[in-house]
Image 1: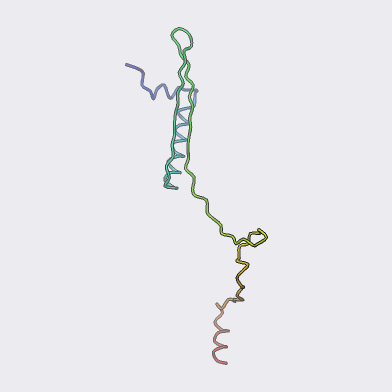
Image 2: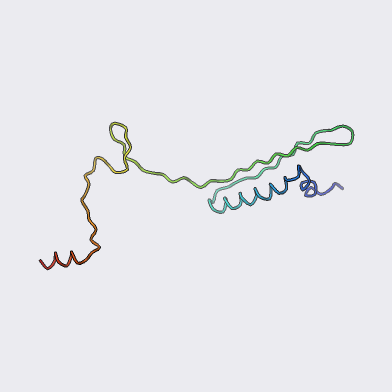
Length: 109
């Protein structure tokens, strides 16, 4: 019977096991926050190293899902400038009416 894979994994380049553990946690957290899928891939390249020995090179690839970036709407002028307010729409001179004393005075007048 072969030696358990987890035992070999713990000995790869000294920190592959710890790196995989950290990366897995990061991917899981991002998946839970975004609702999008992520991935964690471990690739092992095994090469002969003379009689009775091999070398193993590991490669860890992580795809952490990202949250959607918010959109910002702009209005374009004929000259190509971008404006947050519609330049073809008249501004309304609105004022704060949270002070009800002015409203009472206006009603009583």
